Amino acid sequence: MDPQTMQSDRQTLAFEYQADSGRWSWSQGLRDLHGLLDGEHPTTQVLLNKMVAEDRPLMLARFQHHLENEGPYSCVYRMTDPTGETRRLVFVGQSEAVAGIVKRLTGFVVDITEPVREGARQAVEASSKHRAAIEQAKGALMITFGVDDEIAFELLKAYSSLNNIKLASVAEQIVVGLADPSFSRDEPVRCLLDIVTAVSGATGRRDDGALLSSQ
Image (spheres, one colour):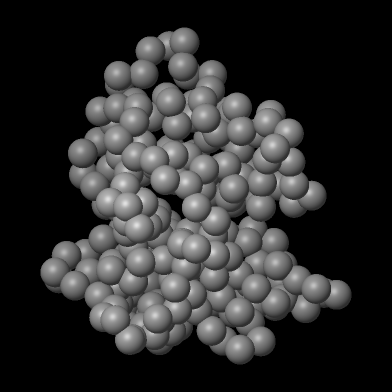
């Protein structure tokens, strides 16, 4: 694996949950964030144990709800990372059902801790000619994941920071992706997830399955 691909894998915070078996698969970046060592397995309890206590009831309720109801989901919560720092995260994705029974949850986690602290520096850099794309991208995130305007903007800033590109460029790539036939999907959530993954993996794009590891 080349250094660029390794860096992309560690930055990507992707996950998959198999409802039948209760088995999680996490990207290396998500494993690192939760302090999992080689040979340790991601579990729901590991996720909850790292979470700030006050946020656990809501997160658990959302998780249970989406194990029973298909569709997009999102939740903002706080966790304590291996260094003891409290981080603010957005958990977004989709629960997928077969014959009305949820079989799989897929999605990604966005760390919005640093963007929140640093403010909207990149947003200020964006000129007025980019605002339409930013608003369209925010709207797509809001509708797809059911988040408000503020969280949608934080997601854009997080992608911008993660990939070291201007916020306006992230927004434009999302807007272009929505109009790109190669991203056409029957489900809009899957479509946007694929677009965001492409943006995040611009330096070394790989299939979701290659990014995820349960061990």
